[in-house]
Length: 394
Image (cartoon, rainbow, N blue to C red; front, side, top):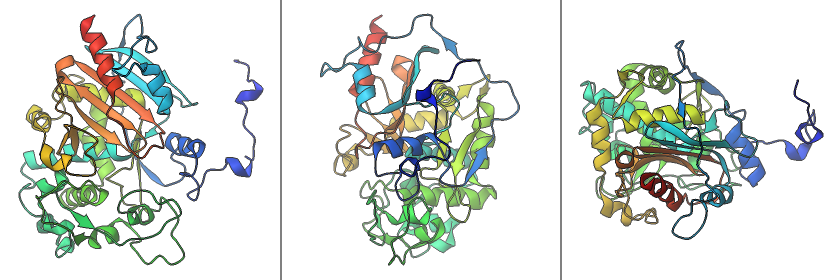
């Protein structure tokens, strides 16, 4: 038996200041870290891994030395990981794991909060249903969800929702945390407490139907959560299945994953399409490899290749450059994926607190970063480019 040192022991019951609640999870780096590591604050639904054996990841004998690899600003990759409060990091090159490590007490088997990286899974589900003829991406969302007729979200087409081109506005509300545009979604999902005078949406459906038109759909990039929630509502209405079940059937159970993933639920049991998924680093590496190989993994074509090739084309770069995401210079957004238009053909799933699944097809590389980084802006990672530059020169 491995000895347990005093520093590893926890106090039971925990001290009051060590208890993370919906009132304080965003108030300190320590509490945010615990929130990202654990899904205990909210109910969740299992995304079952299936009953097959896990696919085996292949590892190189010598792992990358990230202290020696430096970006264009002379910052080492390891320093970057520490500065951005990384919980887990993995690099795959030519199908082999070149680096895998865990920080801040995060365990390899723990599902980590993915936040908005969940959106990219939703985009795949929507495009697959369209590919099967179950929906027309050029029809307005209100065609499939009549309850959205007359709302801001109902005025956009499915494709415009996929590309975040349905500018909407919501009720303004003061909150103790003050996080995120369209803050009422955090109260509608039960993620943060409601102020005493709150009279807004009590669940995700209320949140979506409260949306108001801000600009003409298709004329601007406006990244926000309601558009993905509308997509989630559409696929559930068409299939009669919840989102966790769809991700399980279409993607997760086919990858040969090691662990179940999880989907956070709102107060009435609705999957949070815009940011509710949790998964482990290694399983997301399997997903990344599937995307890198145009949908083929574990001996099968999981997602049709043309769906992924369409993602890689990207969207309207001018719209994004004119938005409040202009710090992502050169990027576009298409089908719920961020496309960087870099020399590696890169595209990524990205989430709040710096979750990143970056796929670089032209460099045969997948890089994953799970974090609990409080910075309001997820950086354009020069470190990722430094890693790829190093790999392709070897």
